[in-house]
Length: 383
Ligand SMILES: [Zn+2]
Image (cartoon, rainbow, N blue to C red; front, side):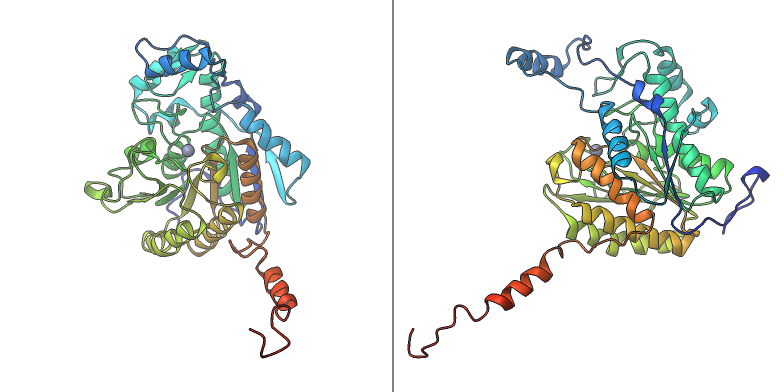
């Protein structure tokens, strides 16, 4: 059950089953880190970049605006029936301040309008980046509000820069503000949610989201990812939270190449019982599409993403009237990224999720019947 709702404007309606809003705001395209900008002195990457330039291989910042353009283009070319689009909004400083320290926010806001490297990690900004990051976090908040108001049953915040590596005090791994954490904290502070479940299926561990809710018993993080030493090197099995939050952080590290069967078992055997115990009143999903084989780390297929979405829908229906909000994290191959997002939207809008690994099985059976007698000798004495 929901706690008291302080804002009558957010009074709930009952959402139409399978109604979906995709939130897409073009301002997030203005985050364009310049890959030719001077690096911090002493960076390892500088040496790598010098090597690459000698080989005439251009260094491309992999988290670029083309990712969202590819998603938008595919959804225009092949619209998903039942999915409507809305623009987003900027997060306020108060919203960001629930998960980031004020000195970190001061530091980031000073970079508005500038080119800079933020961290010795992989995060840089261009003149439009700080505004884009505010819109990415605010658009995630807008998606959560739409679902909590009952304007739609589920929503997908198609945003960048991504968020799950951003820690309370620093930017990391292409992330400036932790979008999903800002939205979870907002749901608890303003929208009457008592318990929020965050499911993170991005290939990389959500070190930032884990840090933010490490001691918080009211936000559960379930994170399945490729295990250390894969970036960012965190998310061990034994890392379960601390203090009151002990037990509400769940890490499931995977070896390279793990695929649909491993992921679906983890959902079935770990996530579902954990969620049934936790009883969330909202489910957020940090959805990265880099577990797809095209990003060369893991082996989750489109059917795998569809099946996970369908299991999350069932969980959301059981615990929270279907309230389910997806937030884009990583995914760098433009084809698997855009096709993956479309697959999730189609299941949210009511398409049936095919069972992974079964495409072609009926045809093989029919072919086996067809060929069955071809290799049986007619003369029983013939060997
Ligand atoms: Zn990732």
